[in-house]
Amino acid sequence: CLSRGLGDVYKRQLYERAERIMKRHLNNTQQFVVRQMMNKVPQSKTAKVLKTSQSEVSKILKTSICIIRLKMQEEEESGWLSDDEVCV
Image 1 (cartoon, helix red, strand yellow):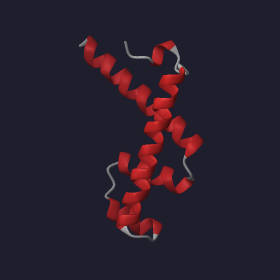
Image 2 (tube, helix red, strand yellow):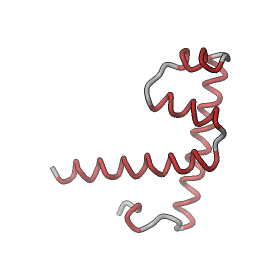
Image 3 (cartoon, rainbow, N blue to C red):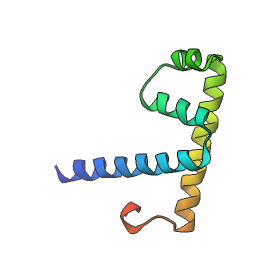
Image 4 (cartoon, one colour):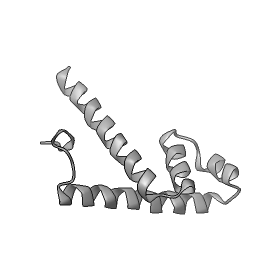
């Protein structure tokens, strides 16, 4: 189905934008925590790897997602996106 294919393209573009923003604006720990979440790794396991509490992992994740959303919003408002990344 064409619309399903377009949905897949849109998801891939969002993922690529998020990756680019993560590399530019998040530190290594924040990037790790976000990737763990994207891979559906439980926060308890991420906390063990980082030798910290699950509560701290949750705070890192929340902060990281806020940064990503803010930077995506800034890109959209500034018109920085290329034409193929704008959903009409």
